[in-house]
Each structure stands twice: as C-alpha cells, then as structure tokens.
Image 1 (cartoon, helix red, strand yellow):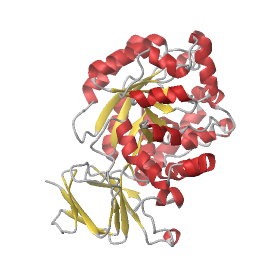
Image 2: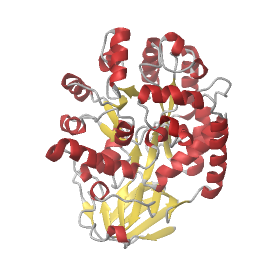
Image 3: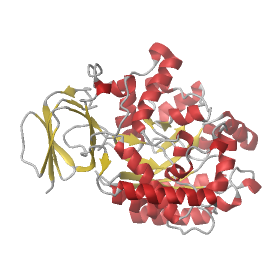
Length: 451
C-alpha cells in the first residue's frame, strides 16, 4: 500500500457539491484514492507540508491535438482562419512519424501537468500514409511514462479533397481501416473501471473531413463497445456553409441525423449554435469542450457559455491543439475564459470559480467520469498545489476559489499529484528527464519543418 499525506494546507478548494473551502486541514491518500480530509494527522510513506499552499482538484482537459506542439508559432499561419490554416498545416502534418508523435505527446502532457492538469483527452486524427498503425499505441506509452491519466481518441479522416473534403489524400484512410483499428484499440486499451488511467473514444475529425458512413458506423461501434464519441462541431461559419451546401442541414442537425447526439457525445468548440440547438443539447445532455484561446486566435467566435451553463449543458474547458493555441496551459485557459465572457456578457458571465468548475467537475462530466474533478473522500487522488509565497500572490489571497480567473497563476505549480503519485515537484516533471525531452523534441521539430 502506497500512502501520501499533504498536511496543514493553507486552503483546500474542494469543488464539491457544497463548494467548500477548508482551511488548515490534511489530505490523506492510499493507493491513488483520497481516504481522508480533515484535521487529524496520519502516518504516510511521503508527507508534504502544505502550510503555505492552496490545493485544487486536478484540471481536466477535454480537447487537444498533442502532435501540434511541433507546429507552434509558425509565421505562415498566424493570420489565417480555420479552413486555410488547416490546408496549410496539413502539408506539414503529413510528414509526422511515430517518433514525432511520441515526443510531441510527452511535450504536450508535460506542459499540461506543470500547470495543474491531471487528466487529458487527445484528439489524434492524422495518420499519414506510410506510418505504422500504432500512433495511438505510441501515445499510450508516452502517457504511461510521464504518469498522466489519459483519454485517447481513435480519430480519423476519410473525405479528402478529391471527395469534396479539406484534407489531402496523404492523411485519409478508408472506413474499413479506421473501424478495424478502432476495435483493436478499444479492446487493447480501454478501461472502464473506476480510477481508470486510460480510456478510448471514437473521434472522426469533422463534418468536412469525414464521410457520412464513417460517422454513422463509428456511432454504432462506439455504443456497442461502451465508449464515448467526439468530433469538432460548429467551430466556424465556413463549416455551417459546408454542411448546408453538402447535405442541406445545419451542422448539429446533420450530426443528429447520423446518430451523433446524447450523453455519450461531446463536441469541440460549439460556437455557432442557435437557441433551438442549445435546447436540444440541454435536453440530450450532449457535451461541449470550450476552447476560448483557440477560438480567439483563429477568429472563430465566442461560444455561448453563460447560456449553456444556465441551460445545464455539460461543458468542459480545453486548450485545443497547440498550433491553434500555441500553448498547453489549462490554467491560462481559465483566466482567458473568465475575461472573455466578462467582456462579452458582463454581469451574466460566469465567475472565476464557475470557470474553475468547468475545468474540473465540468470536464470530468464531459468525459463521462464521476471519480475525478473534486477533492472528496472516495475520489481519485488527482490534485495540484500552488505556493502562495510569491510577489504575484500579494493581495490576491482573499478568494482562493476565483484566483485563477481574476488574478491568474503564471508559473508552474508547486506539486501535481495524479493517482496518488507526485508527478510534478517544485515545478519540474518527476518521472521523465525534462531537459533531455526538450533537446530530442526540438530536434524532431526541425526535422519535421525541414521535410
């Protein structure tokens, strides 16, 4: 039995049903599970002194593209909107290989963990011609090595330019290839048990890169296997025009016609929904991954998050791909989301704490989990600590719940704990050689760009 005690915490922001903040108390962990929160001390294999620290539930990232960490800050795409941005980057991404996927995954996961994220979903849908069939296996190996609780997708693209889609032929696959590999990955990796460290979702890329038969067959397969469904939807007006022109339906109606609606489905972005569509999402408990920084960078628009929250639509927070965000920092996303909706909705905007709840419990719900997202006895021991003894925290400690929205936290966290294990200590990754990964990853970035 492995035990951890975090003692005498300055504050514990539980994000529980009562929105409790506890002061001067301890968190005791056994074998990855929170067993006790309270004033009593306990013996443990490891003890962390939390006297000057705030503790928070680990953040849950509901949409990302890890491979895009290798194409950040490229001048040629900085001023493009989504469709042209994708067309340009596909010509780079078609040169990805297994080693690049391995190190880009380590890069993205490491970045996320250093800023308090403990569970991440990744939407990998680029399978270049000539690569092995094991790119998702490579991602699971990276996640296991670094210690992240990981939800992978078997993403896909099956409609190339010649068929009226957006991607080139070099990155699309047939429906049969995709479904065969989807079954293999679910059978090999998906763990539905409580405190699972690895799960699989089926995630055809988008309405403009996937055929109707793949969307329909993926939904049937996912439900037969008990896994979740994910895709991009209602990100841009261009997408809306595409589906109207192609099938005569708005994007959500198109998805509904293919069986893509329900509490086992979540969509990335969800910006351009009308009132009727919001009600449908609420009635069916279909989820949304909110990606504010990406939506701002690509000039896609502002999702109607205040209304979604009021209607009870499941909403999680997400960084999106690093090439459309240029970062993998979910704490930064909390602050930007708070400020964006304050600007756009004024007094109707979510509070800083409301946004933190999206990034924790909200994300857990979107991924279909009730064992993560809050600090409570019986929940997974996923959490992070920040040290309050810094110049930037002076005068900022009055409201620990809203801190990340109103003030922000602009450095790596003091500790990140996943499944009861310390994976970040004093802002540094524990389980991998961070400096070595930087050297290897940067060399692969240059190799990719030179291709």
